[in-house]
Length: 224
Length: 224
DNA sequence: CAGACTTTGTGAGTCTGTGCACAAGGTCGA
DNA sequence: TCGACCTTGTGCACAGACTCACAAAGTCTG
Ligand SMILES: NC(=O)c1ccc[n+]([C@@H]2O[C@H](COP(=O)([O-])OP(=O)(O)OC[C@H]3O[C@@H](n4cnc5c(N)ncnc54)[C@H](O)[C@@H]3O)[C@@H](O)[C@H]2O)c1
Ligand SMILES: NC(=O)c1ccc[n+]([C@@H]2O[C@H](COP(=O)([O-])OP(=O)(O)OC[C@H]3O[C@@H](n4cnc5c(N)ncnc54)[C@H](O)[C@@H]3O)[C@@H](O)[C@H]2O)c1
Image (cartoon, rainbow over all chains, first blue to last red; front, side, top):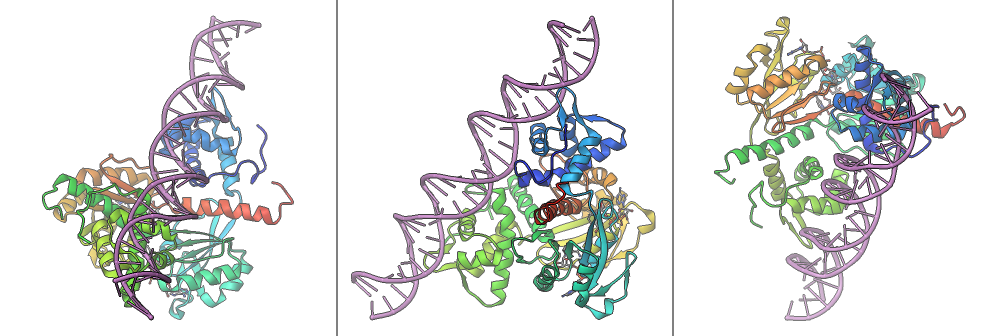
């Protein structure tokens, strides 16, 4: 049951990485309920996935289960946290102090694990100094100093789409390695920078696609 | 070049459905620039994907391109909109008038294509009547009437996690067919209801996973 | 009108992810 | 100590998605 250095071993599949946070959350819940041992079956139920998938996913981290018993909840939680880097501190900068940027800044559950909003920036002079979640909005022009000075590793883009690429370029130039983009635009970044996007319009359109199908199945009179 | 009834033909793969909104957006841009014809190559560039993928995706919709020329931008736009149901009207109800709920309600670009926020609900009596984006916040208890009366098809959950399942159940019971869930919790819905989730914590944790790997590659002194 | 040229639509191979099924490994009670 | 029992870890087969490469189908020029 020795800890395995991270980054070692088989490369962890992307699909698995995306599920680790689900297991992490599920384990937090069992922890609160004082449950010491959890089976893949139970974990699968809590995370809403298949039990075999849970076992395969966890096996990428190492052999941390005990046959006939299950997984030690606390130990597994620790291992997943270590793998995801949740034991580290990740200073976050939010660019764009509009509707969304402010909502994000006010989001508690953010600071919960390691993610700490250390700056909110905006290009609009009228927003400067505005207090958002205990932070004064700072000038976008100061991005570089802020990123370097506060060791920002994650940048969040919450500006209008037309500014997104410019902001991304500035974040990358300042040394940010990870970007979460809420703007509905294609943004290109160098390969050594991770970027993920959250796209509300796309999500809604996917929903309407399937909604439309169901509506047509129910009453396919006009074939449209 | 005849229109094909939607819902027909080969079932459209999920991965393709998720990309149609990207093409749609890209085509809107070319439209603004007055470009009449667009090649798969160009479209791929605008959407940030591979050209072969574009062609295969579009081929699921029907044979709407012209060899040697490309796709008629306007016609293709129309076809994608039809397929995604963007020519329809989709009344949306937002449940939870907190930070996020209010930001979402204020989000323009929402109404842009068919999606129209027709109600913002909250269970907290103190929020009742609060004006958000031109709408008065209404009581969660009235959900049923509101959904039925305003023909709401899409529900957005922006409440704390512990209320998410309850809200989802109420939405489903009221007849909503599609749900977008922002709460970081597992929510179960019947198979005939579509649900998608947007999970900020998961996104950040995925970013930190890869960020950690890169950090370790740069300076793998302490193997941790 | 023919031939060069362009771009689509898709067959085929590969890669990634999923889920079953079961042997291996460990617990626990007698 | 032994055997019944339980749950993990994984080999394998299958399904879905991605990419390449190219024939088919159209345009355009001379
Ligand atoms: N509001 C939402 O719920 C929501 C949901 C999904 C996506 N989005 C997207 O998020 C983005 C922000 O939405 P919003 O509603 O907060 O818009 P907003 O207009 O309220 O805020 C945008 C902010 O960005 C600032 N800004 C503009 N250019 C900038 C630059 N170059 N550098 C720094 N700051 C700059 C503006 O001054 C403004 O304060 C948009 O791209 C929107 O499409 C918003
Ligand atoms: N704020 C963000 O940027 C953000 C980002 C991502 C995810 N989220 C998630 O979105 C959800 C909302 O976040 P928030 O920051 O807006 O929280 P919030 O506390 O500001 O707002 C939640 C609102 O939901 C209402 N509510 C509670 N129970 C309800 C019920 N049963 N029915 C109807 N309304 C109910 C509350 O009265 C409150 O107004 C949370 O689950 C959060 O984890 C928020």
